[in-house]
Image (cartoon, rainbow, N blue to C red; front, side):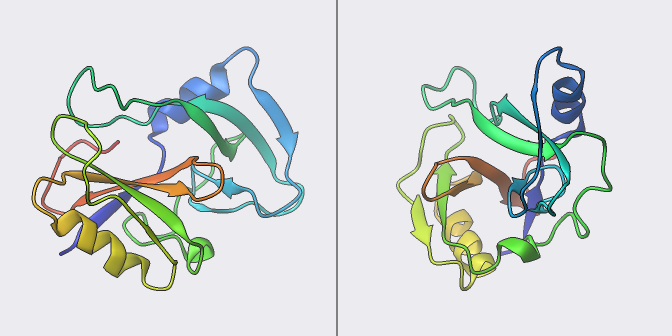
Length: 156
């Protein structure tokens, strides 16, 4: 199965950058930056803000808001918008699967980071799964969304 990986949408980044009081900080290096799907370099200027990733359906009880990092100023975005983030290869992640109602699907699992494309494809191939969110294992933070390449036309 082929799939598309989605960084934070430009509208969400623009909104966060316009917010009166986002948390601004200088990166120590290694922070997972969700605008370009890579680890921050030391001294990158970042924003830390709350983000509610869209999920399918409306009114789902599984909607969540959590902290994410993004560059304080617009950046070039992911080097290959559809590819798995190279900086995050080998990093275990939770793959949270959602059905069309926006409910968490039983295909949700942890992968060890060794074959992230295979793990994502396997979850998306499960009957009823329409979207997957990759999340940090320790903190539960949203990293990115993945949808079937022939799936939803609107990206999260």
